[in-house]
Amino acid sequence: MAEDLSIKHGSKQEQYENLLPQVKALLDGEPDLIANLANVAAALKEQFGWLWIGFYLVKNDELVLGPFQGPVACTRIKKGRGVCGTSWQQAKTLIVPDVEKFPGHIACSSLSKSEIVIPLFKNDIVFGVLDVDSDVLNDFDETDQSYLEKIIALINL
Ligand code: SME
Figure 1 (tube, helix red, strand yellow):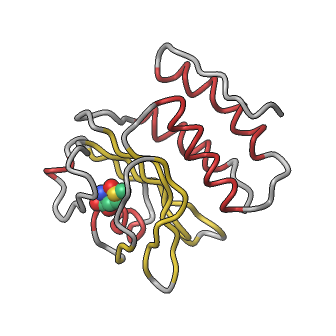
Figure 2: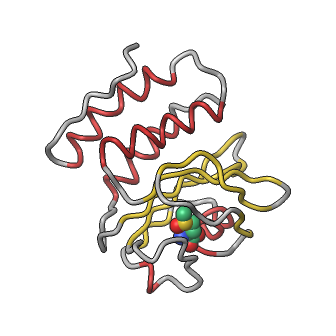
């Protein structure tokens, strides 16, 4: 496919609907996980412009920074720590409307105000998380959860 993303303005849902088939085409037939995570992070950044979008991958019982878009970030996160480590531990998506109110939130950037973290599963085991940070309070809701989970499901494992 052409490597240029077609960006759409409009409602959140319209933006995701525009993005989904393009991400599918980007990932189609490519087996390399890192390449695919890198392109998913870039596509989300291009469409939505959020502060930080990236992946942490489980390695030796820690989350280790993977492909991302945005400012430099913490490299390692322990299980149960921060939003990412809690999402990993609980094996569920966490939406945090105000990061300052999340006990133990790890502030990689002082600009981050709200966050969504979605676990990546392989054979029912969490092997990583997608973390998205916004510089706007209360920026994520069930629409983001639903579409980001759909996008993650497109990644070849
Ligand atoms: N805020 C996250 C840490 C990762 S950065 O936001 C990129 C957390 O509390 O787990």
